[in-house]
Length: 183
Image (tube, rainbow, N blue to C red; front, side, top):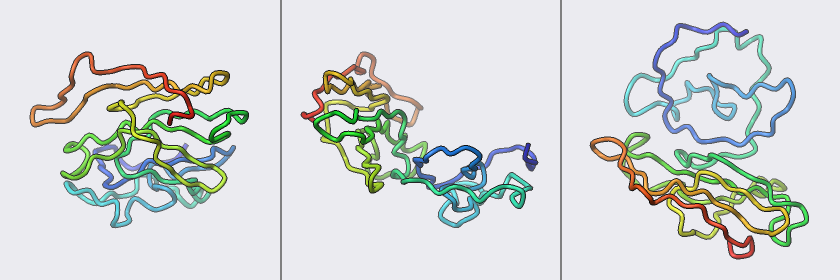
């Protein structure tokens, strides 16, 4: 068990979601590294609060943190993913990832909306490709039916952070069934 400094709030600014290949015995850096970069790096300084400090006191006893296969945009909120079957006619062996999206202004300053879509990951070269925008608002899960070449997308629905907190529209969520070749 690693030794830790005293608990407390420690916001990390501009931290992207990361995709790793999980390997036995590997360390991925949490809680003191993001994608192999120390959280003390200036890019992770939050807009509010102090710069993050390390929590673990025994980095010298740990392996070097693994590097991610790829990074998603900050606040994209990559939530669930599925592998396109290797026998599929389109994108065999690639990943489809549901990107729930930002929760601005809670998670960042005003700006363009991030996520709220699907991404396709080509693991052969580590590239991220947007999938045609659909009717969904906040995809939270994605599954590829292995025999029908159909994609099921669970959409949380309309959900925004407003001055009074969470603003959600009842009944706006849906389960979409879309042919793989229509994406």
